[in-house]
Length: 614
Image (cartoon, rainbow, N blue to C red; front, side, top):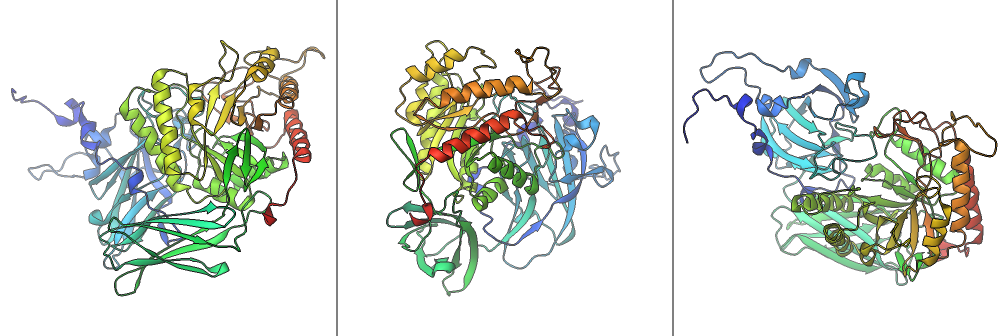
């Protein structure tokens, strides 16, 4: 090839990202936090939007102040002099100019490190929107794709002693057709490092993961699975303990670093919404000289979830899922919701007589499931295989599978999570069928302790519940908006009455806009999008639900109004206003009380039982 004598890499190379496409950080590198001591890297980070991606193009992360001849070069960045934004946080709310920005943004901070001997050090990110490229002291550590799941990257070889360690993250929220989610969604595309960042110090051989579940309800059999990382020798073993009830059992590890243990614990109390009993569990790894080399712990509830015909059973008892949908969004913090905001959302769901929350349409913060464990709420967790995905693209499938793996691995020990959902409102094409069927079977094989579902659309041609994916689901999720997008309620009755599913069905979405601002022009004819019309639609929907025995749960759309660039109507003003509560969480709409009363009615007619005695 002819040499280009006036070629300048940082302005002529449009393949510059190829240098940052590997290593790809995925679920295999995720490390269980497990009660370990972590050093927080949260706080104020230096920040700048980077419209032309110059941190990558011009290799700002190298911080080279002189050229090959040793001459000083002008710098187009000033990491330590940039403005600061909080981590965790979304940069869109930091200042008005950033509100709709979706491209690359650069985060930087310095931190101190002092070695404690033979250790491995990892940086854990709770979530970074879009693609995240991580650099430490000028070294590229890897790229993570998928903006809602955690990831870990090893930093051991790149750390320096002292206070001058520079961590840089290029957070790129640019949407691409091949990504998960794809180009078109109905929620706000918040950007940035919006969950916590921590430094994790571990021994050379450590416990990477531990899964604990109830595998036999009647005999109270527990299954424990663990994975050790590093060069583990045959004389390593571990002790699994539940101190509160005197359980202490030895676990051996195979040459592949995996260990498995089954034990019966007759005195175990089962976890349920009525009795959210959690136990402290821990696993201690011992080396060949019988020295404790690593320990992880967790708080775990033990329960079973299964289907029997058209019913859902929790701990062997029938269960109706009295639910509501929830986005990870708040007016003040965007996607970086706080624990207090999660608790408030759960409190309001409880006030509505809910026992179940659908976390839509992507993995929410890990604190949602942890708090749900404590408060006794059941959860549906979902990956953003949303609307139209590039179903024929192997790379897109790889992204979806990795996000599913990271979500499942993160929340494996959460009793509250009873359903993994592999997507929402996708067209029933051949490519989509293969894509989502493979995801569903992967989830089932990876985790037999939970139900598999997806939020499907109605067959509007034949007016039936009919989606080929149903063959791979334990529970059928059905999204429908009769009375709103289609005003003909008779279609809903026809669909439900002439369908004969052999599995339980959850009405995973229904609802309508509800604006207090909409004035009623006529007493008998509610204004389109008013809270009065919303209330009327809910009344009609509930009347139909009462007649259909195979409906085993409902999750109206949605608990709170939330931001979305798609909704620009007279009363919407950048919000989806289908919430049962306003975006500032201060005012309940009349439909909230309809659901509250409906769920109270369902509760009274359920076959009551005391799960604590099961």
